[in-house]
Image 1: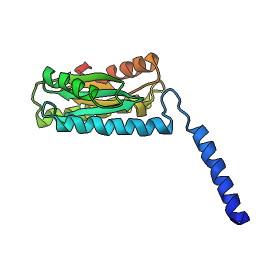
Image 2 (image 1 turned 90 degrees about the vertical axis):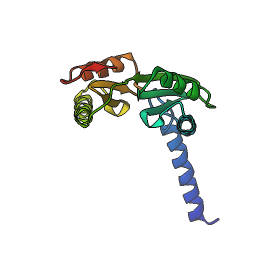
Image 3 (image 1 turned 120 degrees about the horizontal axis):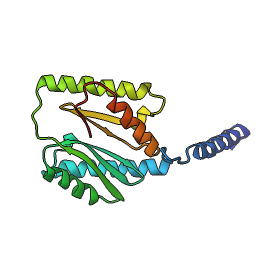
Length: 176
C-alpha cells in the first residue's frame, strides 16, 4: 500500500469513527444498529399482517422504535383490532405493542374522503407552524372527521402540545 492509499484508509477510518459517534442514539433518534433492527421488525410485522386474513394490512400503519411496535389507523371491527395486536406480538424482536387503532364502521363517501384530506392537511400545517411540535415525528390520519395522531415524540409535553395544536383546527369532529 503506498502513502496515498494509506492516507485515504486512515481518513476513511476517522470519518467512520466520527460518523459512529455522531450517529449515537438520542431519545428520539436511533443508533444505526437500532435502525436496522427496527426496519427488520417493521417488515416482519407488515408481512405478518398481510399474511393473516383477519386483518386488512392496508388500513394499518406500523411504526417501530427500539422494538416497540405502534399500530395506527382505522379498522372495521374490534376483532380486527385485537387480531392485529396478537399478530404483531408474535413477531420475533417485538418487545411491546401499542395498539392505537380506531374502530370505525361507518362508510365513507368521496366527499368525506376529500373533507378528511383537507382536515389532515390543515392539522399537518398547524403542527409544522407550531414552535412547540416536531411535525416530522407526528403522523396524521383522518377518517370521517376523526383525526388520529401517531408517532414517537420526546415526552408527554410534546404529546400534549401536538394534541392541543390538532384540537385547535376547525372542522375536527373528534380527536383519537
